[in-house]
Length: 610
Image (cartoon, rainbow, N blue to C red; front, side, top):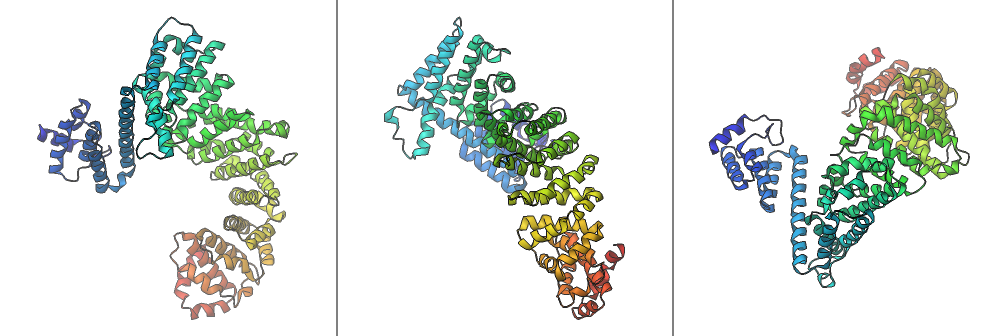
């Protein structure tokens, strides 16, 4: 039997974690049949044949976990990671499962001890669950019983149990709350929807006042049962009706139902395990539904934005959002921006809108979502109108401007016809913001300029005529690493296609002291752009002569022959060095003294092609 299973093992595909595509082996069969000791024995035989068999350790860890051998389980997973460090994500997932299972066992053992000791809370929970399961009562009866049950689940342990050994204040609170939650779970509390009356009220499409009250009490019960309890959270979402009804409650429920549904979802979204559980649901509508809460003027808006902020970094959530993003989310977002310009500034929920903008900016890290939103002409137009200004220039509006600029920066990672069409008005709005009193807004406006200008020569000519070179030089002289990186990038774009920009840079930066200073930067992107700007300005008469005695040859030579990770550093430095020596032969003498002719000769291909 063991030899046969090992032969099956070796024939298995290699796509699965640990080396196996379909998990078709005697070991997995034993696991499915709950014959865990046989699975362990078979894995041990496999390890005798191959001591580095990942799958054997993986399956043996699963078997030990099922037997509640937590120490042996962890040893198997640690050995798996030692063999293949690239399995770190799988290792973490397995270790988390072991942690949760061990925690669940401790909770249930503690709850059982309390029950045997005559815990009032346990007896109350049992009695109330029995009452709720009995048919034939009106809705207020079930609502009252559910409310009492929520209170019982939250009830602390008796006073004599407060002196738990080794528990600090925080741990004691968890212990006190956890017993009621565990009593609820172990007494099949999550099967409460098996009651026809309760399920009918919870799932009703159009709820009566009595059904609404019962639904609220049910949501409050689940909050009490799931707060800080990952096992209860898992069991709750395993109920099919819950996952199906949550979006309906959010989109069509009363304000009270929505508040409690948001509070329940927040219990999940605020930690990684809960977000993973939510990711198993169909979340394709959630972005649209939660974004709509921006229009609310109460706590629902903040709760919804907190949930979205938590979910926005999850790949599964991003993937599920793609299906409805262009047809539902993008139009809704545009509508929110338009409404913000049409109503009184005091009526706009600026804080929630700023959070929504930040969430979309984060979601646009996903290439698919970013490409969809970047194509929306309506979105760009609405954003430009919002940047046009607010009557009272409130702090909330400024937060929105900051978030909107961040979103624009993400969208400008794309290149399409829509961006080209809007490049001139976008650059004009950003140029106007360069005099803003908020330095963060100035930095982001400069960042948007650095990304939008390459899309349009017309935009470059417009901003150069409006004095952008002088502005960028001012920022570079003032310092600030992030602003400087955006400013030098903007200058590199302008000097590439505008002789006027080259002339203004030569005039404004005497002997190129600012550019030479940037060539000493530790940031390679800044160095590459500074070298590019310098090379463009060296096309002007007299520019190379102004650098005599400046040490620029040695500086450019070091970068041209260096080992920077960005090839643009070597390339742009080599071009600048070649143009320098061609325009002013006296620099060639310095180059010979530094034995740099070989580097210059190797860089001639860059000079000729430029």
